[in-house]
Image 1 (cartoon, helix red, strand yellow):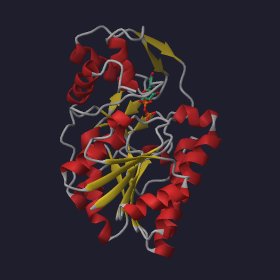
Image 2 (cartoon, helix red, strand yellow):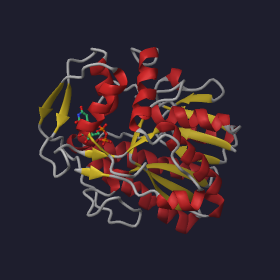
Image 3 (cartoon, rainbow, N blue to C red):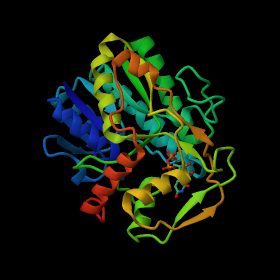
Image 4 (tube, rainbow, N blue to C red):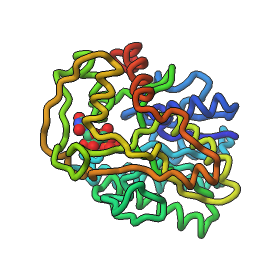
Length: 326
Ligand code: UDP
């Protein structure tokens, strides 16, 4: 299939591009490089540096490459930042997203796979979380993703847009070629590994008074390759109708302290920590029930062991001490 990946130069986007190329799809990575890295785009893909709100450029790209489906991953995705600057999240995740949908309609591109998030559930009443559970985001990031999911539902109803919303839990790990590199870094695993190599003095633990087994937040870490694989499966299923899936490994998840302990074992390094206050907008526990995508598409995560996930990130980081070349 001929696929346009928005955010194709980002962490997860770069791996989705890599996996699409491995599956012999034709790929255009579309990214404004505000956060993405040109060097993260596999050489087999066409790269277009542009903004989603640049409708002329977007329409020209869709037409020139005769795009059949879009994987929409371009977004802002930081819970804490969204609480302080909701306007940015509504602008980049909702307004720019709607600009994409309208340009797709204009160019008669009728299929989209959307990067959604566990943050649409807010503070869930039960674990693991299932797709039919209540949607009550506790931060503007989750609200903005939910607003776009709802737009997809109504665009499908009125304009027959086929969509898959993939609600990611915590993406982690790396492939041989692509890993996580943000500036500034805010995600737990890369921060822990930076502390392991001495690039930072310590890791902060945000909140130790959550109602969890050790007082720190529980998250469900999923390897970025498994996440990418789910996009390929979802893409292939769109003709059979729109769908919504959770993507995580399930089980008991891991607390922040458990992540740090596993990283200590994997790296063999000391990782100093400092306990601090809760981060705004963080729910205590987010663990996925992914039975639906397993049942309907036969997806199953190949790398469920956190040591293996962190190990892949560690291998990548040692090869890219300063992230991607600029
Ligand atoms: N976290 C932490 N210290 C950090 C970064 C994150 O304790 O320096 C915690 C955060 O509160 C959350 C978990 O680690 O419970 C995962 O956070 P991350 O930002 O990696 O992903 P998110 O869950 O926000 O998508």
